[in-house]
Image 1 (spheres, one colour):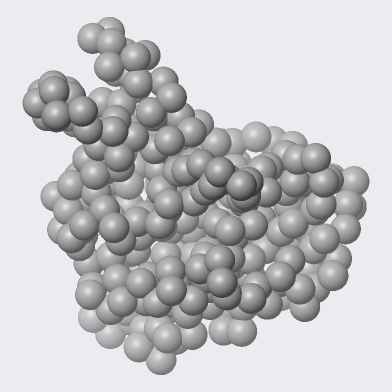
Image 2 (cartoon, rainbow, N blue to C red; image 1 turned 30 degrees about the horizontal axis):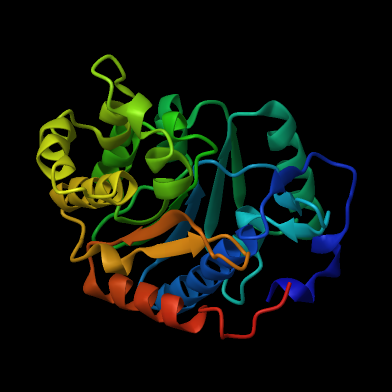
Length: 286
């Protein structure tokens, strides 16, 4: 568990991202699922890969309290049965330097690859960092997708990774904090940012139909993302399988969806267990 390494919660002077208190809820689910995935799959697959497309510097600082918490890379590394390979992608140079130093400090023996630059143009570098899999050497990957801004993710990136690897995805969809708040901008005819994010222009016609039914725009886009994943042969049964992350305030306002996609029903079963085991009533202290 993260609290096993107290240094995770110390300000080491390296680059640290400012985050909301709700990030701790998201991190509970990331850590739990990574641990469950890696342990359950270690005897079923020859090689397990963790890919973080927007890894950040490895630590965050909670607004107002200044509490330091570990980011997704450190959480994925700190599990009982580590992945065989970790790939961390980060566009910002200062973030990338901080992450590498932290990983080398806390987990010097882990097999890690650090890729700096825009992940949408670094896919071949990701693939060459992973062994060639075959019927006699089977590999399974888990890809975490949490861009700082929606515009940093091109759906084609997910599509290419899904085509080249047997991979599950854990994706943050900024349904409330960005999409719904900026609906008027994203629905303008000359704004193509959602075309890129969803990998299709077809969402516009569907939105024109649902708009008259007063459908929530953020939820609509989250469902559209799920349908796009379904077209890639990933299981998407209902938006209820996505987890809504809320503000840690009295009003508990929703912020975004955390969505899991797998081609195997067992993956979805693991995700549903993760949701149950990391609900607000469960004890998980940072």
